[in-house]
Amino acid sequence: MDMAIFRDMHSDPVEHDRSIEDRRRHKKLVEKAIKDNLADILSEESIIGESKNKKVKIPIRGLKEYQFVYGKNTKGVASGDGTEKRGDRIGSEKKQGMGQQGAGNQEGEEMYELEITIDDILDYLFEDLELPDMDRKKTSEILVESSRKRDGYQKYGIRPRLAKKRTVMEKIKRKQARKRALKEMNLPVEIDRFPFVEDDLRYFKIKKKFRRESNAAIICIMDISGSMDNTKKFMARTFFYVLSRFIRKKYKNVQVAFIAHTTTAEEVNEYQFFHRVESGGTYISSGLNKALDIINTRFNPESWNIYAFYVSDGDNWSEDDERTIKAAKELCRICNLFAYAEVMPNSYSMTIKGKLTKEIKEKNFIAVSVSHKNELWDALKTMLKKKEKGGY
Image 1 (cartoon, rainbow, N blue to C red):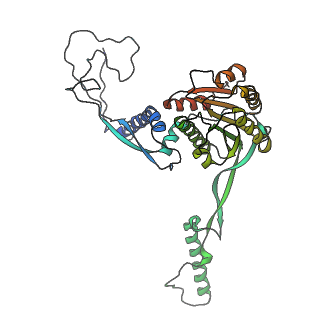
Image 2 (image 1 turned 60 degrees about the vertical axis):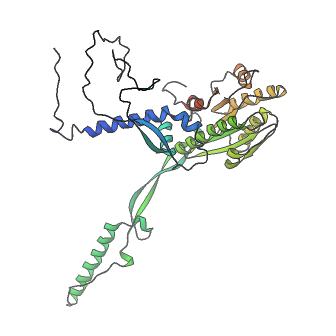
Image 3 (image 1 turned 180 degrees about the vertical axis):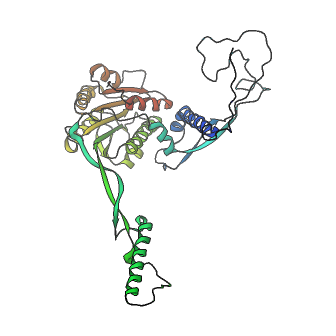
């Protein structure tokens, strides 16, 4: 026979702190709310160029204390089949007022809005992502500053590094020396006022700590031709905005190059990349070949981890397809990863994605389709999924 165990929550407040469990449940609900509402955050809110402290609101379920709920004594058995999950209701009737049509007569679920900054949202999301195969090129490892720690004292420095305790000790030592000198001279040793002087000041000496880190080059290539309408361009820019924030947040020694192309390609700065508007035809090879030129000029593949990300709607002049495939294969040869996201592809003709996936069999090539705004995050996760131990 099962026995219910009632625990005295007040017997040991350290061991049975109820707030610890509440905080854990709250954190879990916040993470779920962020992931459930991510599509709306990325697609409906124009976050491009916003400050990292820009706040957005997400709905989150309220937390309630556990309690016994009495049933209606209806006949029947409510046994499970083994597929139930925590929180599921077994054998209960659906309540009116929980999203059904018509006026209900039951209490709804308690919800409230949580304000959270874009930077905090990205912290939650980026935890399980990484640039794949970063350690493949061991020659690319360089020393970078990782932290600083205190290493003794010095007489000169900036005020934020003032060692107050040490400064007081220096003043006391000077005062005691003054008293000894007065005593030896048979003079009164009582000193009414003994202020700090410049020579008393001591500052923490800071020692820099270095660690080895792989340097990486990120090449962002975007199609801005006439076939890329405002919706497609917004999706492409949102994709690259989240990608660039991810790179800068998780990696220190990273160089980023931005390329925009129509029938010709041009390296642009970050502001131009996210705000420039163009029209005209499309030669996808122009953007890929521009990336190859930048790599050959600035990023030696023997010394750099190189990642190329390309976004387009897949429309390309057929005369350029062969050149595009050739350039894509070359990128696969010299890059750790070449990733292609095709946004809202045309359904009436074969896009470049189908041709690339047919011709390119390298494992470091990833191609995904993004038909709707809410698929942007899944595309990024596919490209930046953390590698399992022992796998690619």
